Amino acid sequence: MSTKTDNLANPAPLGLCAFGMTTVLLNIHNAGFFEMNSMILAMGIFYGGLAQVIAGIIEAGKNNTFGLTAFTSYGFFWLSLVALIVMPKLGWVDKPSEGAMATYLAIWGLFTFLLFFGTLRLNRALQFVFASLTILFALLAYGDATGNAAVKTFAGYEGIICGASAIYTGIANVLNEVYGKTVLPIGAL
Image (tube, rainbow, N blue to C red; front, side, top):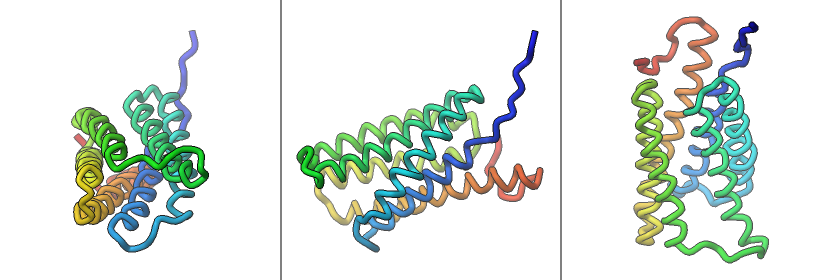
């Protein structure tokens, strides 16, 4: 009888940093600091999208259902968001209405809220990431549903905080593992 040895690196820091950095950049745009541009779309495809899908697949190999579900889902969120922006510009389909975007964002908010309950068994840093992401999706959905530009701008600032918390959590995992001690606390349970 053979035993399986887990010799895979922890993919969570990759997934968290990919999510966090892409979220910060998109929300700097949402807050009104610069226009939607190819830098955001490229991050959405290659780092927020593909890197998180890769992290999720590695989580599957580590038998981590939560990590698999979260990282692959949010990776495909980024890919689908880029598609929603790019496909109309290519003339493939009509641009989604604000109501359609509100629905898209609301269903992602519901999904995030449900995943938040899984973080209650993990650590405080992940709880903050998922709670702030739930709030971000709610604000973005409300902003699109009402057409309220001030809410969308406020959502941008909240999204910067959410993304920064994911970056912090990812880097904390890396540094804590490298140094073999708590360098950056994550509020382990």
